[in-house]
Length: 277
Image (cartoon, rainbow, N blue to C red; front, side, top):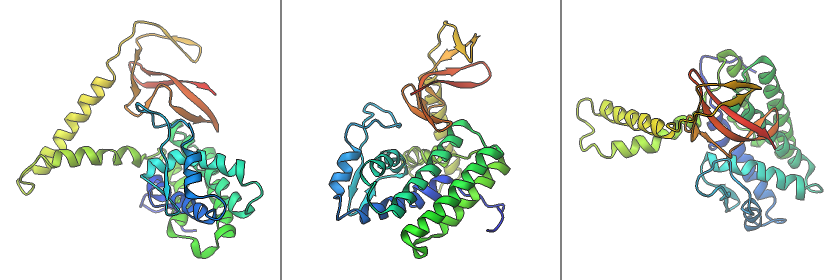
């Protein structure tokens, strides 16, 4: 294994966006075609489950056809825990190697989510991620053969050391969400060859984002809030945490599911109040 270089990999494109998770989910669905149809698996995924993505309707909407899960990276991430439940519930007597590989993949996903939500890039957290990635790699080769191993399986080994060395989890999901806004503003510019056209587009995008952040987080409350057993003064209750996580969202904390009950803005930092499920 080569050491981590100055290059950096992001979890979104290594796993969810045409990556390791996408490939293995599709391989699993294809392997099951004589046991469960695409429609049956999709129906199970859409049978009243609630999505972490929120919105007006929190029910999951998973599309599976042509032996593949359709949608964006966030759709795959929504489907992963449901498919894990499906595998544990219905495939106990099925191909043990493929079951073990998917369970190992989900363990990697859970650890990545833990690092993402907690920001824990410690040696302990990254060592655990490295161990889980190595275990999944071995399970995957037993289940599908070395010929199915892709370069992104190698890239995955770099993530743990990268997080530890950088001391920060870089979330490409947040950056990718800007594409739609940037495209919409760019389409309003008639002459993209004009001097400073890119500057004006990016300037407008930043103004829109700042306005949205102000609108989302202007919900002051004079009530005291107890945080970690101590009363916290000068706190604002917010609609969402930095525009990403809202009340009712489910997070993984120390491998356990927690529900967000409050989003708070202190004078010098942000915070979430969570309750274990």
